[in-house]
View 1 (cartoon, rainbow, N blue to C red):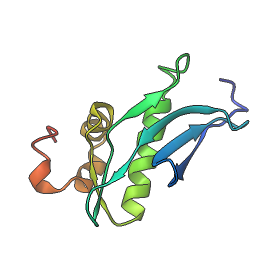
View 2: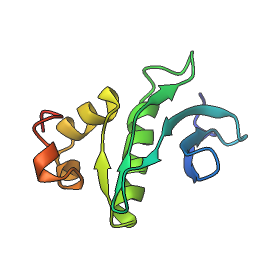
View 3: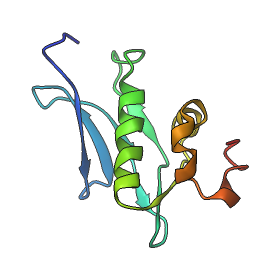
Length: 107
């Protein structure tokens, strides 16, 4: 991916996905989300399209999804192993996971 193709993330409520696209609108990856009660969002799966692995796009997607969940005033349930690992590496997001669930995700 060239520098003029700055990726962006948007929440698509119709498909229940955070979608990562390049400047042309081409889908590069997504993170699924599902409501988990009134105050939490489950993140069950994250996927980066073949050929774009290792470019930091998964981290960009995780950060955008978690920032959006925080902006909604909700908790995150990181069922996706990638999202859980991202939170372990970026401790500023641990507070998004309810204290009683942190042990389950090794946070």
